[in-house]
Image 1 (spheres, rainbow, N blue to C red):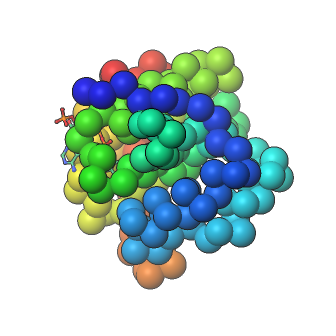
Image 2: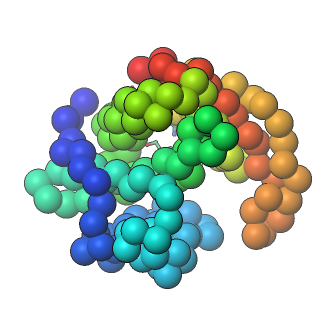
Image 3: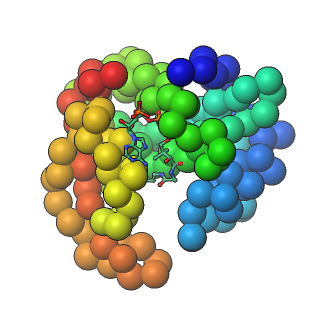
Length: 151
Ligand SMILES: CC(C)(COP(=O)(O)OP(=O)(O)OC[C@H]1O[C@@H](n2cnc3c(N)ncnc32)[C@H](O)[C@@H]1OP(=O)(O)O)[C@@H](O)C(=O)NCCC(=O)NCCS
């Protein structure tokens, strides 16, 4: 595992995050949405992971009703399987604990076997299926884990 530099995202990171979105998702988050969050107009926390000042991955954590919500996590394909996402999740685990959240939940595409394996290793288990959750009509699986995660 390579140790990444973790930090909160700032507005100047917008282009890098948009590139990561395009490289990682068939339906990327829209630039305007990310820009608004980075400008402090959202309630979520954006964390970036970098190697030598290159942002290689990022994650987004929110909270509602005492539950932490993993809203996004993505790592550039060429930097995967080096523990980058794990390091972001370790930071989110600390944050969720600070927020006094006892559980974390997320939505994942039913077809996303790689991400599902990643989440299962962290202790996430199936909670429910949300029909047609994504804009292209695919179902989401809602997964939930206890805090602390299995890191
Ligand atoms: C899911 C994702 C964020 C994982 O990032 P990563 O930095 O490669 O993950 P890590 O290296 O920290 O993985 C930690 C462990 O999780 C498991 N894991 C991660 N990716 C996996 C995969 N594709 N298949 C099986 N297991 C996987 C492994 O146990 C891995 O440990 P190992 O490499 O020692 O075997 C990355 O694959 C990604 O960006 N995917 C595209 C975007 C996406 O689908 N995001 C999730 C949206 S819900």
